[in-house]
Each structure stands twice: as structure tokens, then as C-alpha cells.
Amino acid sequence: GSKDDECARWFAEPLQSASPTKPKCRLKSSKTGKYLRINKNANNTYTVDAAGDGGKFCEFIRSKTGAPDTFYKLMSATEECKGQCIGCYSKQATDLMCGAGLYCNLKLYQEN
Image (cartoon, rainbow, N blue to C red; front, side, top):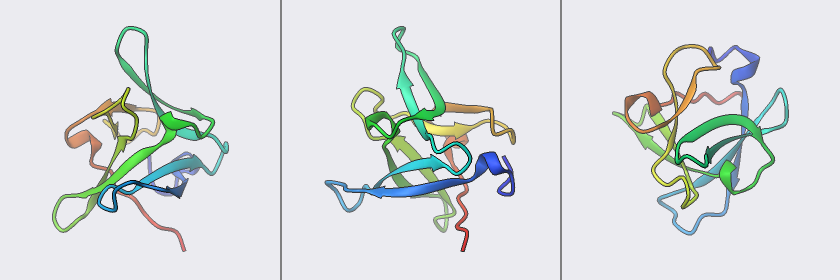
């Protein structure tokens, strides 16, 4: 969604990471207080939702991509969802997906 959309506003919470080149974070909705997460379903598919309680499925590895570092990728930090990134395939905040590729290049803004 638009950076002005209240559903698109998240607080980034830095987490301890074993690797300085792979910083970890959680994203907490400023509207609901719930966390963004990727879940692995029983049929080995993945879903994204904003209903997490802050557990391991809400942890992401953050990396910069593009030139010059204009986008970010948020990849699941869990072994169960390894390689799955948060993505958005339209301008609607409800059209979240997980996977990999260009749809996972996210633009993040910092509010002062």
C-alpha cells in the first residue's frame, strides 16, 4: 500500500543476529500491534499474514538489494520457511505473498 496508508505502517524491531551481515528484525503493525509472519502450511505451501504474536515465524533477515541499495528483502529467518521472502504483487496492502524474485523488492521509509 501507500506509505501514507495506516495499514502500511510498521515498527521495525531489531533482533539479535548470529551474523552481522544478516541483521534480523520483526515488523509490528502500528494499527493492530500484531506481527507480520510467514507460515508453512500442512500441504507445504506458505502464507503471509499480519496476525503473529512475535514468535519465530515473525523473524526476518533484512538485506539491501538494487543499486544503490534502494530496496530491501525480508526473508524468513526460520528453517521451516527458508528462502521465503515477503512480497507484494500489487499496490494493495492486502495482496501480500511469499516467495522470491522482483515482487520481494520492498521500498521502506523511515518516519522521523
